[in-house]
Length: 129
Image 1 (cartoon, rainbow, N blue to C red):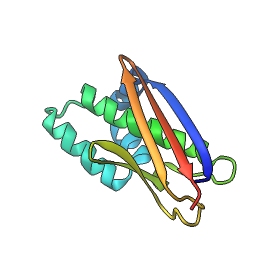
Image 2 (image 1 turned 180 degrees about the vertical axis):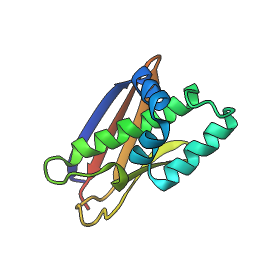
Image 3 (image 1 turned 60 degrees about the vertical axis):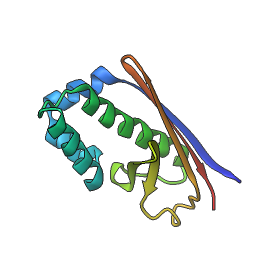
């Protein structure tokens, strides 16, 4: 295994909550891919439509942190965009789906998220093929 890059990002969840309350649609369509937006809407529906529900804030926060960490792992060789990376869950664990992975020289990806109170951290490790 050759490590291509490691990235980490920490964020204050109330910041995400404020952004969601101020401009939810603009923020969601900018940050989340189509598949992530569908999952967001399903969670929002189960939360009674509350845009600032704790589950939604953590959902968006986790995707923000993991995408930022992925960007940092690839920088300066490649500059990924928000829409280049989707975060999906497989067996309860976050997994990265990166568009054109081979073009970026990415093999296996590893991601983890942890949160405590108002803080959330995402870490990504990218391997070369």
